[in-house]
Length: 382
Image (tube, rainbow, N blue to C red; front, side, top):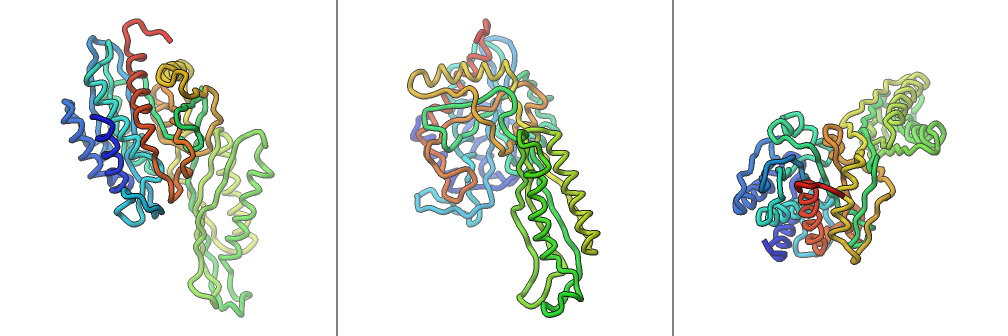
C-alpha cells in the first residue's frame, strides 16, 4: 500500500464514522485489506474486533500492536471533502488515522517480518466509553492471541508534527462516568413552596460537587470532576419534579477516584435530607489509569528515536493527560506502553472541527515497524 492509498483509506473511514460496537463497515474494510495483504484475519471479539497475526522468521515472543476504530456522537463542523456523511457522528479522536497506520504497518511488516516471534495486529472497537479493550480481553483476546507485551499509539494535538512523546508510569487518567437523579415534587412556578424544586437542588449539587476537588482533594493530587449535562423541566411556568445530571471524574490516583465517589455519594445524601427529596448517584464505565511499564517504555523510546532521528523531537517525560484511554485495561494484563504521535496545531480531540493530519501517517507506520523489529529480534537490546 502506498501513501496515496492509505490517505484515501483514512478519508473514506473519516467520511463513514461508526459508533462503538457498530463498526461493521470499518471492520469489513480492515478485514478485506488484511486479506489482500496475505493475512487470515480473525473476527468477532467484542462483536466488531479484528485481529491478524504475522509470524517472524523464527520462533520467539509475541507482541500486540493495537489501534482503535470507533467514532464519537458529535456533529462535525468543516467543509473538507471527506466530512462525515452521517449527521451526529464523526471521527473526532483520530481513530480513522490509528486504524490506517496499523494497516500500513501490517503491509510493511508482511514484506519484512521481524527476526523472530509473532506480531498480533489488534483492531479494537468501542474505545469511546465502551471499554472495548476490556470486552476483547474478557472474550479471550490473550488466550487466542498470546502476547507478552502490548503497545498502543494515539495522535496528540498540540505536539508538533514530527515529534513523539511518552513517559514511564501513569500517562493517562483513570475515570468513572456518573449519573445523578433527583426526584422532588413539581409545582406551579408561582407556588414554589408547594413543591420540591429539583432544578435548584441540582444547581446546588453542581456547585457543591466542585468543592470536592477544590477543597477536599490534596492540591498535589490530580483530580477532575466535570458535570457535563443537566436536564430538568418542560416549560417556563412549572417547577420540575425531576432532574438528571451526567458527568465524569478523573484522576491519576486510584484512591483519589474512590474518595471522589464517596464524596459525591455523601453530598447526594446530605442534599436529599436537607431538601426532602430523593437523590441517587450511579457510577459506571470505569476506565483504569493507563500505566506504562519501564522496560517497554524504553523499547518504545528506542523505536521513536530510530524513526525520528534528528528531524523531530522525542519527549520522554510528557505531562500526563487527565483524559482516559481503555488501552489501560490491556496494560493491567501485560507490560507495555502507550505513546503519542504529534498531530500539530489541529483542533483538540473531541472537538467538532478536529481532523487527523494525513502527513503523520508515514511516521506512525515507521514507528510500528521499528518497534516490532526492536521487540522481536534475536539479540534484543535497547
